[in-house]
Image: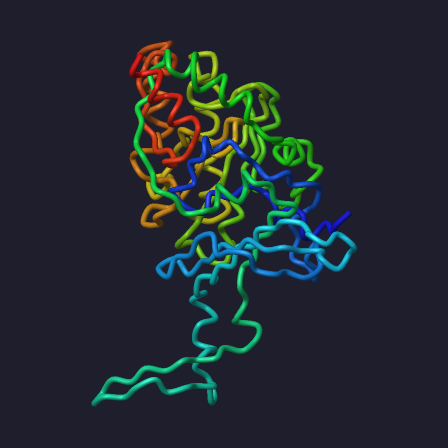
Length: 336
């Protein structure tokens, strides 16, 4: 088994708003506690096959590579490695300019000059996310592709989307590992242990917990069998109210961020099919927080209070990749 400290890095991330591959393909996280400790990659070698996606704005690159080629398997195995520059930490950034920093002059003109600054090792970390072994679905998911908006009716969900998802879904064992304290137990910020109306609140792996500007936590409900918005009825209102109220209270207590500075929402389509709620700080443009995917939890609660079958009946709009089989299925169903 690979080092436990590495395994949680395989947990599903929503690393871009375009990650809408029916998105329910999750990495199988394995067991680990998410602790910050010396570790080794769970494979040997990495020969780049393709740059799947990159963003100069977000300082992130997604690489497909072949690994373990020296182990006797001539073709090696597939892996995805995601490299992301970490945010500046206000309390540490002044260290970059202390003493005589290592600089390379790019240009100088009057009062303006530009340099490449080479930071010391302890300030130059790159967040590295590993998906290994990677399947073709993983490779397609991280590959940048054109998106298309589609509107799904309640009937479309029952007749097209749900059967498709049930045929495509991958393991969400990593979710159960968290709920059962088999993985990432030391990262849990708050828990309501009620098996029906409780949840755990845990930092999202995209947030390094070093600053509040990109605060991001996830509430994962204990109740199993709830896949998404489409499953919600008034029976689930106690759970949803607990998540909203207790989640905000826990974040206020731990991070001193009040509820009116938090965006609390669900995704549809979600990135994995076990009901969960996102908590992000206002001002942070979190992946998937746009109107075509995010549904505010307070609005979800109000919709269910007003109409018990709202999410079984209503139309929901979301984006899918142009080559996503679900897009074609929905388009064909809506033509017939």
